[in-house]
Amino acid sequence: MSGRNIAELRAALELTGWRLATTQRLAQVGDWTLDRDSGRMTWSRELFRMLERPQHLGEPDINEVLSYYTPSSLDRTRDLFWHAIDTGDRCSLEQEVLLPSGKQRHHFTVIEPHKDASGRVVRLYGTVQDITTRKRLEAERIRQLARVAELSRHMIEIEERERRQLASALHDRASPNLAALRILFANLADSLPTQVRAACGTLLEDVDALLADTTAGIREICTDLRPATLDYAGLEPALREYVEAFRKRTRLDVVLTTAGAETPGLAAEAQTLLFRLVKEALTNCAKHACAGQVRIGLEREPTRTRLSIVDDGVGFELALLGQPGSTPGLGLITMRERVELAGGQFVLMTKPGEGTAIQVSIPHLTC
Image (cartoon, rainbow, N blue to C red; front, side):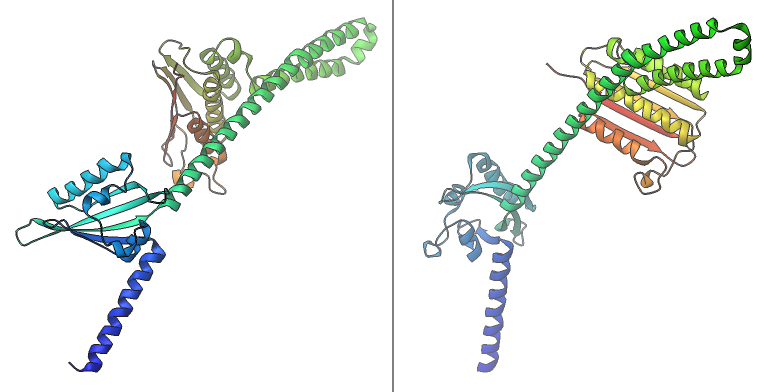
């Protein structure tokens, strides 16, 4: 081989080494090898930099390497090495590293065992990636999600409080005033001369019917905003009252069955949530599902309450949920989000032509 060829090979080798070192530096990935019999390690330049070890000191032995890890990571790291040696399987682990400068970093190590012809592991090759930034972003994301969840819960509480206040105002002021107005109107009509009353009979009946309809409408609005039964009697009586009114109003065959004894563990907020779920589901059945039958089941267990709502309607394609133009729309998505905010589980099952089933599980309060 000529001197020129040797020079070209040397240049290509140097370029490859430079590219590898640069790639490791940019990706924050170092690598190492460990000879099982001698215990000798070799490190890449990037690994020296990552672990703040001057290169002139050379590679440490395995015991010194283990000293880099925090107590919570030390045993797991030692076990990882022995697992790779004993099984010959590739393995990986996230670790916390304490550097000489006092900085704490997060590393992700992957170990690839190398075997001889007899199948004995003679060498370990490993890569180490600095994932501190990723872990910090993950932690920040978790904090932000927790913050969003807390704000969402607060907004729900405000919404329910405003609903309760508005329903109370309508019930305590508007309804009594309308009832009094209807009595006064009846007295006024009775006091009219017979001829006048006869001439205005249709008008008087229309006004009385309008007052009665307005009174009933306000009663329905109060129930929609916040059923009083939910506050003073609890979830089951409120559901039975609402289901009965819904059945009469829509002529749908709705059946509510319950099981288990009342438990104080189901928070008032959770009871409100389950009531809203039933109301939203029944509204969907009446408006979109073309259902003939709806079966609602409320089952109370020692640690949680389960709710199931099953209809025999037209169903829909689950993949279309939440997409523009989708008939179920945001109602079901909101239901799921509120259940998850309460720490519960929400399962929706549906297919076109096969109806819809909703299963909800809400945990009880723990002391």
